[in-house]
Image 1 (cartoon, rainbow, N blue to C red):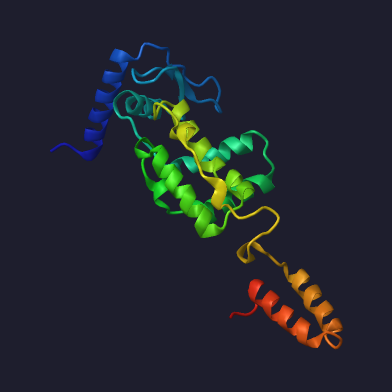
Image 2: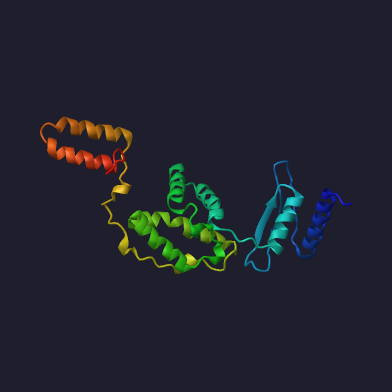
Length: 231
């Protein structure tokens, strides 16, 4: 009976043999304790060389095997961490990175557009998603422009890795006529911080005696928009 560990060793040896037959670039072992195994690879379906690095020789061969024999097509959901990493490397502020994460949580998380394999995403799918989002979230042109960067640049990451032949976003045309007017945020976008709420109602209470009927109505409306009361 062949033990599981023996089977794994056999599989790894087979992988190594196949890679050595087609991979002609030098494999460089680590030169220091903190270095990693590395090499350059250019699978047939890639237009340029790809640098491959790994912590062990076996992990390097595993990566090479996947590159040459298994083309893994990701979803935007799977690419998003790399999108954030790229933004961080480009010295984007922590506040900007946090804003992208907030965009993701609000507009994209678990949506079909981000759980579909990138090779299956079409320009019309992207257009439909954003036209629906404009109506669902009362997006302004500015907010739309900010949040769509995630999809556009995530697909660009895939295109540069030759996981898709072209970026479908390049052919996208979004009708922005339905966007909410700039400078007039919808009630859903009005945010009141706790200290602002206290100041607001304190001021209303001061003026309440003189304009009691008017301010009572205003206070009720503001309370609803601020999330303190409901209709």
